[in-house]
Length: 472
Ligand code: SF4
Image 1 (cartoon, rainbow, N blue to C red):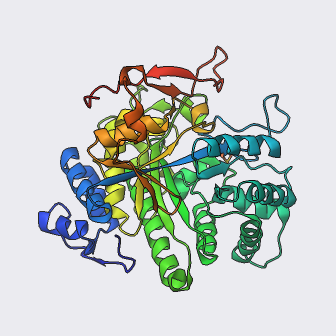
Image 2: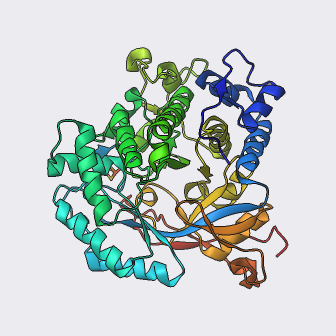
Image 3: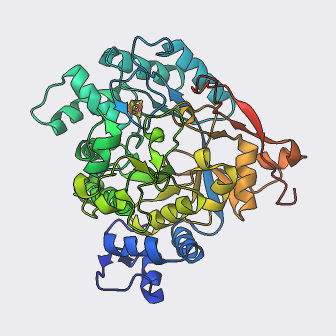
């Protein structure tokens, strides 16, 4: 289990030293951002995986790795923001703009409950047409009809936009957030998901998150949620214009604000950031995706530094003018960079309980491998996904496959709840994966289909998942 009292930093220690890293694994020492950056840059990936795995085992043990059965519900795609990485948003007058009817949402929740689901993750665009009463009515109806379903909903950018739309009472952002979150909590909101984290550093955020709240507002939203006793999560979307130091700065903000929340509200039943999930940017159908990859332009000086690295500073205060191509070149992330970033997050975020594997974008097999690179949780069976799948390939897996992937990685699968409590350990003959006789017939559903017009259709196709390697 993680310690809630921050461990000491040893800024002069060599972060590649084995003795020092043993202290990190045991939770006796915490990494400084400088040390984490050095580990990212210098440690061979297999070694990094071993240390992150050791830290994960110190927190979560050697036996269980978890998943949750929940459903993503994207209640509207109408959004006032214009994030350059987003292929999901629509203006209100566009033909395929939508806001789900409450009955549609209830129907989706029923389907979830029918397969043993326990939670919904409900997020949408920032839709100025929806009044507070719409949200309160929705939450109240869900609570009335599905009292056992956990509602994990409305990311900080949506909640910050509520301030603008609803003009709640309060002299400060914090007071206004408290008013809105209290109302939503009273109506039936349980916890707040960490969507919209992207990259916190201002130079990057100003380029990619047009109209979306800045880092301090994001973090303040979560702090107020913690004050009100609600747990939250944190996310990071990387592998675009940012530098590596931006990723470490992002993790450092998550860690330091968690320290503050625990110190200020921990004794009074306050909430916490329970999980960190990071995934690489998906580029299709997005304005940001039209930027050239670094090295694809004749003028790119590949002996020099990547523009994002030229700008990025560990304090997040980089100067966007430090490189003329900053914001115009992307550095897409592959499997190895993803695993490296996730492993570093496990080592740096010593006060965050769970690190989630991102198989939804990386694919089932990398998600499985991620369990050896610091992740303890496979996230959710995915019944539908609309936001990321509008920008690139994402996958849907059902419970038997998810269990099979966890078992194939050498662990026992266990279904969890939102607070990471274990609901069911699948160590018997009735485990969901043991009902499958022929794994060659199993398919992961791919959710992204490129149409002739270049837009994602939202239809699905089957993709062989080829799960025969574990001798089942
Ligand atoms: S990422 Fe979210 S906030 Fe940004 S444009 Fe898309 S729907 Fe809107």
